[in-house]
Length: 120
Image (cartoon, rainbow, N blue to C red; front, side, top):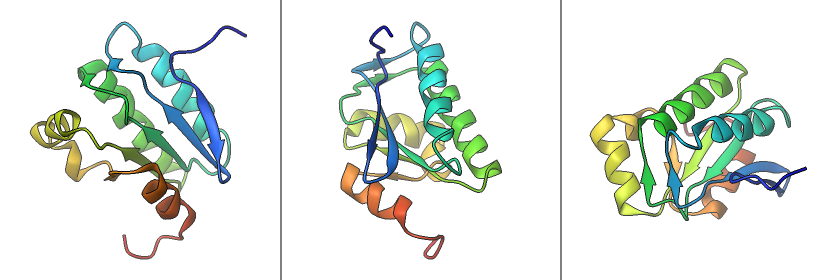
């Protein structure tokens, strides 16, 4: 199996997609594939670790939105790990910061994904 730009690891029982420095139209199809693999590991609940990502274009954002919608439809949850201010700004400008849940660390994401829907 060839190396993928978007490895999927299982951490504490939660699938985690790890994104590279740039997410754009060139690799958005690989992102979609990795997100589908992660969603298949259970009830559509997983995290996307964007800690290394410094650029994400509309193709990448579209893939994230679709994966978030699929997770919700499957009664699951997708959380973004976004510590970088540049990516947080992109999410804020597009309004996605109010649509897709996000946290600053993978640890926070794992804690939230492991919890039942309590605090919303």
